[in-house]
Length: 280
Image (cartoon, rainbow, N blue to C red):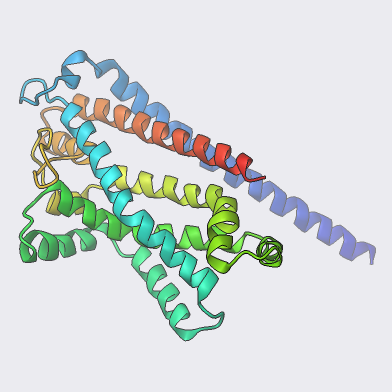
């Protein structure tokens, strides 16, 4: 009995040490990447990189920043309603154990593992060629919305399932219907989890390159409308680094991209914290 206890304690200590080691390695790699980008890019940040118009001399990233924000907003506008309400149906309305629900979940998980370049080729064939949208921000946004849809659906579904059934039962006992219960009780309680999925979706949108090259194009200008071709920050950084003439400016673009992602994630986390506190 004492030997078994000693073995279990040894196993627990080993697993605990491995957990701490994995955490330290993860944080260390993250800090190294961030520090490397900052050291390489910050010295080359200059006012000309934020000029209103792009030229081959200033290689301004301001048009790419505006395009990134525009494409992110448009993609979320397309994907969030479909993803959230699909998850609501699967969680709140569909019967548990339904084969169709299992098929939808399997399909969603499969779509989340498809490489982004495959989505880009699909967007090129369907949105750009078949629908005749040409390479445009709209075609890129629709492609990105399809990419992040599985992520939004799964995160929303997990957030809804984490809401205790007692919340629903209490609402039903007070005479509320299913729809009112979902919108007044279940969804507000699940907002923090939903916004966590939105944060991940924003990160994937902002960092996407392959799909946007085929659909949104690489034109370095501020788009006048959703039908204009433009490049996002990630595509801008890829173009600068691939040319080999503006490597330092590419590192500076990476710094701005990192700050943009951190800023968007921070704002989303603050909204999630505020809304989560308001539902208690």
